[in-house]
Length: 267
Image 1 (cartoon, helix red, strand yellow):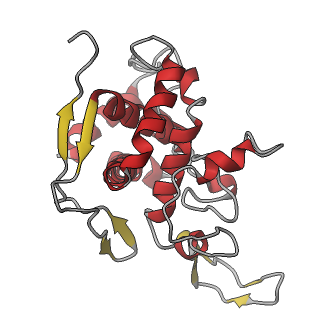
Image 2 (cartoon, helix red, strand yellow):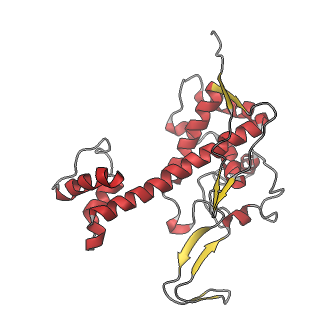
Image 3 (spheres, one colour):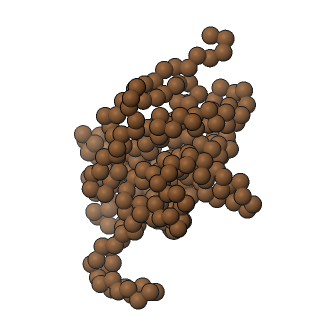
């Protein structure tokens, strides 16, 4: 179905002399337009291959964000003590408005820290930074990688290394919030940031280009849930164990939570 929908549009894009008008016409052209117009080799210009890349990009951006939201909601239910501090922060940032503006999202330090801890405890993958050695490589420590070998970084294990994260198996929602309170650290330790100790979004020039967008979407989702609903597990239930599919860490898709719209003042 995806090919049936995408391929005719890609062919139309390739034939058009000028960019086709879209809701994003005032800004940079969407990635699909770029791929349709800039393929150098014949297989790069093939509509089926372009559609396949678009589907893969959708999987990488939609599934991972939805999974992170799922984990965050399960963690909110498992740690009800963080709900009121998060609500207080959101209310202060909203400052009487009925919605959050983009510039407000960067001010949600506690919510950003909560999301960081949720992802640390529930990383999307056990490994990351997958690479294929195209030529023989000798690393600076003398390790030799022959041509054709696949390598990956144990990113999940790094997140639970006690020499990096004290009490790594304890869920500490405001761990990064406290770190940002220290002198010179206000712009560090954020959900969308990457470094050698936090590689869930990759690292270096190939780090996920959409991580800031994902962070903003998750903050909007969580802020809406927190301000408009009470959520908890059914009586006697707690956070279910994650599901493992190969190296992928999936929140239990069959978990049940109770959701109730909050009563607002004056109603």
